[in-house]
Length: 254
Image: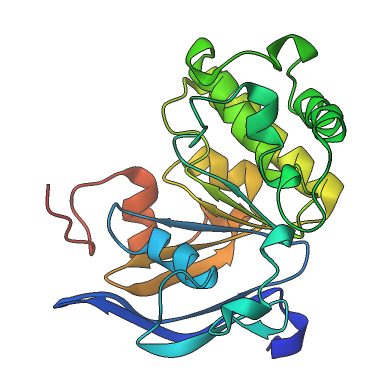
């Protein structure tokens, strides 16, 4: 059993309801420093609620979450500058050129960089995700979906975070671009030694990006193991999800 102070992220018996909708029903798992962890499951099972709870954005009904040794109920103790986030739709600011999107947080706060310093760093991060300096002055509306994902990824790693969250990183991308993004994320996680948590429906993303994965259903974790065991498990919940089968233990309304 992993000791509490060894984990980068620890959830213990986490419960959360919104009115009569019980979303989380006793979620417990840990993510080790430098580990890449994936949360999988159908739409509306609570994956995003877990991420928001880890970030301290949603108060828990019961249980606790520890992030880098700090109880996230005290949001003042969470160092958000050490956390990066790749949002599902990119969440880029339409009114800002690419480099300002990447450097947005770097030019704010007590340790903010000057615009010149921030732009130089943004170009470096854009290069890491395969984008040249020619995109720095472009606006999001001038970018393809794949390029927007890369800009979002560059922003997520701009501050060299210790923890990175990836929300459906390949949604809306064709298989080739999805493969490129998956490989970029895996490479960045390996290089930076960051702790990563990925929300995804894409089984190829799970295989490439994550070391371990957990399957959520009906507010509970019904499978948790190393990602390499995705195809070999005899867990009926996992088998139904991986195969995309209509019949199985998960009764999912259309």
